[in-house]
Length: 132
Image (cartoon, rainbow, N blue to C red; front, side, top):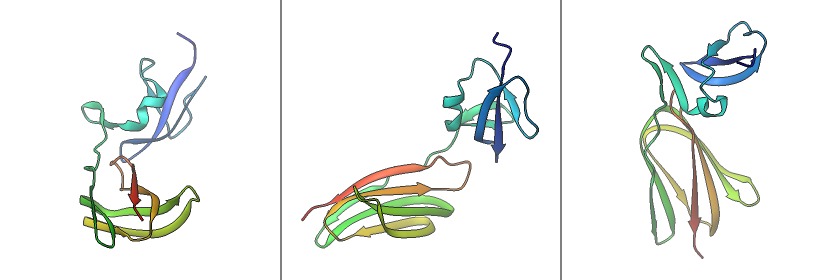
């Protein structure tokens, strides 16, 4: 026993902040000493205890004439997508959607797609490439 408490702040049952200290701050929940703070980001607190947060299915990536399509199925409402060109980090697309969302990449290069679904879903980071 270290004399320090592990604690987290929750939104929709998901860990959004955490720390360790001599007291548990207001608005935070103490977590068992056996749980690693770094692992809690992938968990959510339910009425049955700690459980894995849901994840979106991996997208279908298809390459055809004129570019590459990255299709996500079953996205919850208000899922945000940001497409950046690697390695520059320049944002080439920002959008939000639900259900089936297809992102069309037409310019040759490497891309990073940052997917931010609403809580309790886990964020997702996808790499895609369009050949010359």
